[in-house]
Image (cartoon, rainbow over all chains, first blue to last red; front, side, top):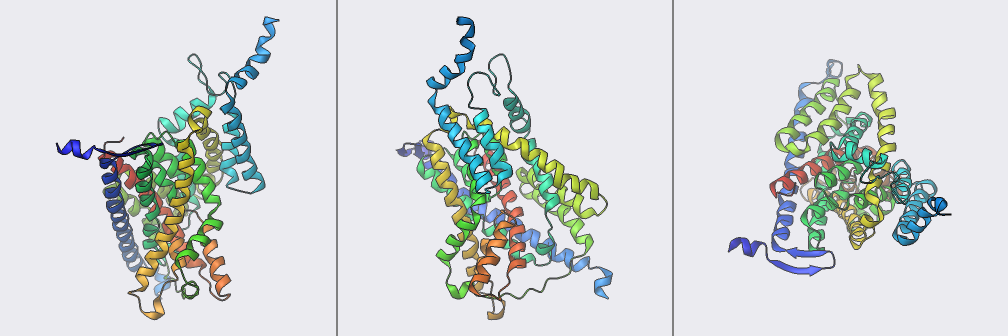
Length: 62
Length: 382
């Protein structure tokens, strides 16, 4: 029953049919995708900060 | 006279398939844009010529049941079987990128993430327009402003619009100087565009420059495994550059390797520009959605900068235009931002900030491509 609901066709356009499952998945992709990118970028940011703090050239420190 | 019919077979075939003539015109248009308008000539010229090549009658460069044409072979080996062409191009691109401006000003990384917003907006819009989800996800990646990533994702997702996606990605990249100022003006005030940002970069050690590509590859491999081929090859190229020991290899990757792949990538992509496949309503939809993706990527980056400004002290405000540079079109986007900043205030130099955001955009776009592929696998589309 649930599967039937998820695959229900919402409307049809000249390019194809729009079903609720694809729509829900695209919205899920938007939310989780942006969250995923921001998490990766923040992780890389933290790595850069740590690298910059721990690997300063001796010449620069002087 | 029948013996001479081979002279007219091709002409008769063309008369029966007038769509091929339309593709000749499209191919000619791409060549014209490349030569006359300087629109990404390295890719659009081979693609334009390739579009003519693959729309010639009879077996030609495509082949038939008995023979394999050269363009089909290049596509099978270089793209379909292994995605080798776009990935090898990433080695060259990695060797070209100097991550220094980003490493010395790492907060710009956030814009490289925020400016991928248009990709996901476009996926939703494409689904609403009726594209199947796999095609919608491939179309969205046009917004990465990164040709090889667009090609790789559309191939991996087996999108039928791969040719149109590649044309859109490279065409709009060339149009960044027109698209971005328009989008930025739409969501910023003159006062915001005049915000000055002092540039005090932190010094970056050689060790950091060497460790950075290795650690980013590890992070990508652990968090978004589908992105590891994209990120890994990009970072491999960068490691060759930053090692300081492989100058010859670095120069080869930046020059001959990237050039060779570029020559054949364009012609190979044209395999997907056969008239029966290319000339349809979907192609028009792809072109329109590609533009939408570029505009909303820029707007995403700008709005994120405005959001950050709500929490930043007055003397540390970010010029929101810098957020718009978080796309992958490097260094074009950074130059556009610098030009816009100087237009508003001839003493406002944002170039280095914009370069940092722009370089972050290159990382962001491949991570976005990897995340799209991960979800493609989760949704059972691959």
